[in-house]
Image 1 (tube, one colour):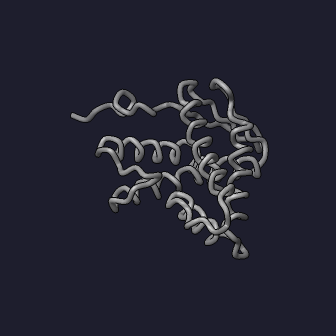
Image 2 (cartoon, rainbow, N blue to C red):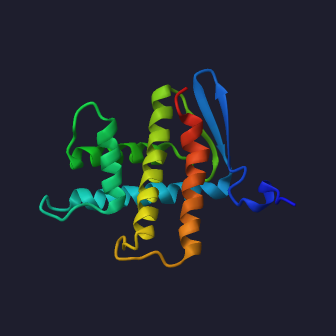
Length: 173
């Protein structure tokens, strides 16, 4: 009648979370570490490219535009795009520095570490959301239109997985 999610969802069981005092510990299924690293590195490269552009360059990629907009909404003071993107880059660099090389254990010892990790993956999810939205509107991103429905759904599945596995478990209560 219904498919067993464990056998039909390729991302099922990839991350398990536990607590040790104030620390949050994630055990990552090794094949998914490169996927997380690819997403973090991809957004970092996009941010780096934008920060290297001259101030007179046209508006940002839609993935960054949504990210900057959301960061401005949550900030106490309005920030300029380069400041927001520099903060994003700092979080991504930190997240990449603590991500295990080949799977294993990710230890987030403090609430601030937990916030930084969750926020870095939320930044990735926000960028993917913007990509999917642009493609739905028929816009090209980096000169590419969405190739087909299967690609759109693959990106949607990855965004939902990143959110469910990393962002949601680390949201403050």
